[in-house]
Image (cartoon, rainbow, N blue to C red; front, top):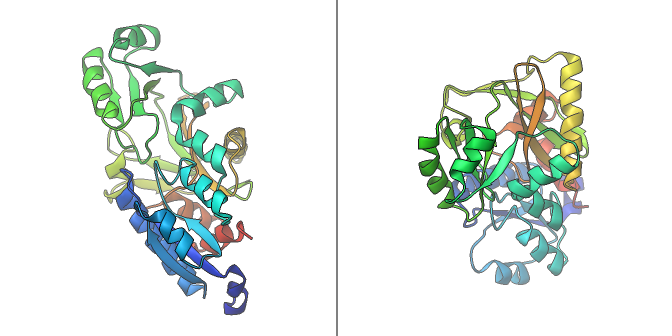
Length: 305
């Protein structure tokens, strides 16, 4: 994109950091996005989101906003609602879709209602752990409903492990649920402007694709091409767009899946502001699709025009 056409965006605020448990990842994402915008000649600046954010947004000259916030407060509809109230165009999904996608429990309810396969699940409380194991077994992923980056998540294989996993998740969220473990390959598919990008298969030696495997470890394997047949990848891509649109999401995002031994895909969740770090998956898929990191950032920003 030429320097001249970059002027059509005006002054762009990149919101990053924030106060969620994903702050460290967001700082890296925001800095990477900011650097890309500068390279493309965009008049961009960074805002580390804190308690003064309303004042900053009111007092700065801002034409549009690139949201690089992950987790509660930035990805859950609250920031989107504030920006709409202030009349500032922003990247990514709107208020309702952001709120739904951030709520993994409600996301799964919508998948179920939309006939989109998702692992069987139950809400957890201290009182119902025995009942949940009796109903759906002890091989479970335990998750806080409103966190991302695998924060607060645990994989358990016995009733004895469930108490600790529940307490670990409950530290982050009053809403905790368990879903059946699907044994098989893990995939993720980026969605950009209504189109699914090449699928990525994730392989890790960890118990599951946890925070360390995502952001720290150097032995996580990302396969793109993902090894699926053309027919199966097309099926997975269609499912990605269906899942994305079932929540009303728009612009860009990422959908995560497990596949069982029979090749059945199970949709796990939708991320409306995925990571944009050097370990991140959307830039990797975009590159396989022929888009550089800078092209990807500019394509996302163009959604605000």
